[in-house]
Structures are given as structure tokens and as C-alpha cells.
Length: 151
Length: 364
Image (tube, chains in turn purple, red):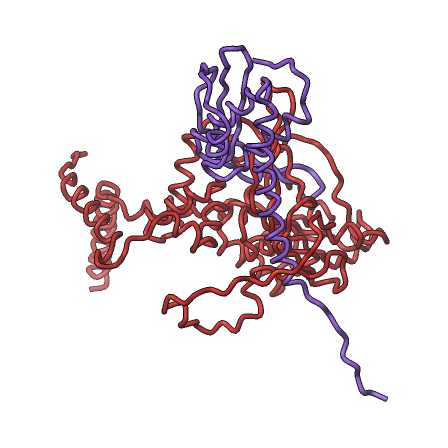
């Protein structure tokens, strides 16, 4: 099932984006963009776990922190493109749609998917991140020194 | 003679049916949804994920509902579910320096790059019951302030320009995994950290507290405490490259500890480390203190015989599922065991009485 198309940085970015998308969001965007094509399962959606690792002291030797749930699947389009998905949580429908988008991104649907699915996803993720960062920034302590009358 | 006993079946079924009814409580009160638990009891959800050792807020919320809010029972349910999952692999170690921080404070340096960011904390609240919450009060929107979004450096990074703090050297070894191999002594630091991050919060807190009160005193300062999200990246074999497979909330605590030096190490600040799933800062601070106490041997410190220095004691008693499993099993039927104990005590009693009778006869 190894793919030969070398678009690694791009592909890494869109797969990562879809793995973290809120439940049902990729499906809603895809279905608004174009009708879903037929496909064949290479690996039907499967729920499993991934052991998450950390590093002692943040930068030292790795240790096992605990597992997280992940859903994965792989499919192929009639024209031969293979789509893979690994998404956080137990979300078979989301894994399916992420693999479909991954496969379709290798076809001439690439531009419509980028503008109607991936760009909005990216914008929404950025907006969520900025909102939290700005709430955090509002809780930043502004120290000021009182003048001490000691002379 | 061993006699097999049956007959509990109907009693057990009826007990479970009553449990379900009691779990629901008064049906004139609206039922809790799993989403409500996930969103509104999120710190309980975080504790169940951390000690259940499985990051999945929906599952943790479901477990809390099923367990009627008994968090150790909920953790038990999560641990049991976890064993049914096939493991797809292990992630690359998360980069906590890349964390999108909700909270980030240092008790050692006031003016640190990135500043002291309090986040959604209970600190500085008055701990007075808020009766507005009982009255379905509306929540105010959290204020916002424009800021640049980006990673915040770790405190120890810029603290260490003088070289006064022990370095955490970057190495890439495959860590031992106590979910695959039984926990055995001696346990290296990676194994200890895995055991501590899933350890019972109460036990870890008490162990940490004992070090503060003087048992293996090592005077910890919270160099940095940060809470926020990090992406989780994993190498995908069928693709041949790594992708982010999700994003998790973590709490990280780094302590810096006064250290006068030892036979092997110069005077410097040493470090304790805590890293825990979710917003779980009491646990992360406790973990860092216990981690530091357990490091006495590699730092060439004296073992003063304190409980928190005893890796075997700490690690073999820190897991609340192991502990509760063994503890609670004693309430299950032990009729046969007890019959033999009863026989033994009766026999001993007869012997004692017989010998006393002989003494009396001899005295007369």
C-alpha cells in the first residue's frame, strides 16, 4: 500500500489538519463541495490506540505517557488513487471522509478541495487557536512596583 | 470437603438492576448526558483519562456516568476498555516547548519571556461557595487581549545560561512499557515516569507532601507549570512519513531543586519532572516532586530511608486499580478459606484449653 507520489509536506499538512478537525466537520465541507465518488476499502475503518510519548524534563529521554484512541482506514478510488486516514478518537465516519479527501487530493479535484474543504478547516483551526491564546493573554500578569517610602 | 455453592444468580441480576435505577436517581430530575459530563465536569474527565491512561474525553465521561461519579471505578472501566484496543504504534515524543499554552507560570522568575499567564485557574479564588451556580446563573464571557500566537520557551532553557541547572540531555531510546512488560525493579527513570503519570492522584500527592514535610527533603520550587495543547505526531509506515494524528491537552511541571552537590555531581539545581494528560496540575506538581525524590541514586544522594525514596514502595503502591483490585477482592466470598481458618482456631483453642486443664490438675 506504499504510495509513490511525492507531495509529502503538503500531504502531511492536510492529513494532520483533518486528524484534528471537529467531529463531522470535514464531511460537511466535502459534501458541500462535491458529490462523493465510489471507492473500495483497502482497510475498513478500525479503532485502536497509539501510545503517546513524552520526554523526561521536556527534552530528555523518551517515556510512555499513555495511550490515545485513533481511528484509521485506507481506500482506493476507481481511478487508482489511494487515500489514508488516521484521525483522533473513535470516529469511523470522520476517518472515512478524511481518507476520501486524501485520495481526491491526488486527482484534479485538488483545487476545489483546497478552497472549499482544507482552507476553511485551516481558518477555523487558526481562529480557535487565536481565541484561546487571546483569553490566555488577558490573564497575563502585569507587574508594577509600588514606590516604597523608606527614605 | 469442598462443596461448590451456587445460587447467587438472581440476587446478582436484581442487584445490578437496582444499581441502574439508583444510578439514574430521581427521574423527575433531568438525566445527565455524556456531553454534559465531558464539558462541565472536565477536571474529573481529565483525571480519569490520566489515571486510566487513555486520552479520550468522551469515553472518560461515559465511564464517569456509568460509575455514578466514582472516579476509581471509572478509571477501572477505562483501563479495561483500553486492553481491547489494538495498538497502531507509538507517537514521536510530544514537544511541550511547542505547546499552545492556556496557562504558564513560574514561581522562581517573575519576569520571564512570555510572562506569567494564569489561565482558567482556581488560584486566588476565595473558596467560597458560589450560590449563583446553583441558580443557573449565566456565565460572563472571558475577556480577551490581542497577542501573538506562538510557542513559549521553557523556563529552564533561558535559566540555564549560567549552567547552574542540570541538563536533560536529548536521547532517542525506546522506553520500557509497563503495559506490556510487568513493572520490575530496578526501574529506570522512563519506567518510573510512566508509572507516576498514571498513578493515583491522592497517593502521589501524599508522597510529594511527605518530601515537603521533611522525608527526603529536597526543597522544590516550581520552575515552570504549563497547561495547553500539543499536537501528537506519529510515523505512518504505509506512508513513509509522519503526520499529526491529533491534539491533546497536557499539564507539565518542572521543579528546580536546591542541590548541594554529591560525590558525583557539582552543586547545581536539579530537576523533577511531571507530565500528565489533561488539566491536572495538582497531579503534575506531585509527580515532579516524587520523580525528584526517586532520583536520589542517580544523583549520588544519600538514601535517608524516606518512603518517597523507595522506588519499590512508591511504584508498587501507586496504581489505584491494582490497589483497589486487591483490596476489594477481600469482600468477595471467602467461605472455604474462612472455614479452614475457623477449624484451625477451634483446634488451637482446644489444645490451649487441654494444656490449661493439665496445668490445673498438676497444681492441685
